Image (cartoon, rainbow, N blue to C red; front, side, top):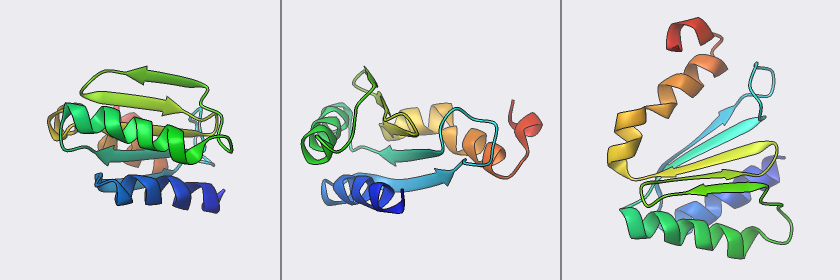
Length: 111
């Protein structure tokens, strides 16, 4: 699993994603084991990062579902969920607080 996480974060990093964070949620009440959040430089960059992930991770990874808009892309790999957001969306939706609350056992405090 750690190799998969490192490969994903490496692809994001080498393609100029910013503020990459990994959340270990294995022992928590969440539907994936890991969540990864990264910031893009803008809408076109968000879509470009998705394309880089598809190119560099397939065929090893199975992209179960991709929800794509210019400002936010969510990629479901089954046990890993990847969020790529523009900086504005990242601030607006503050997924870090939600996922940190899950990770730290404070689910009730984040809802």
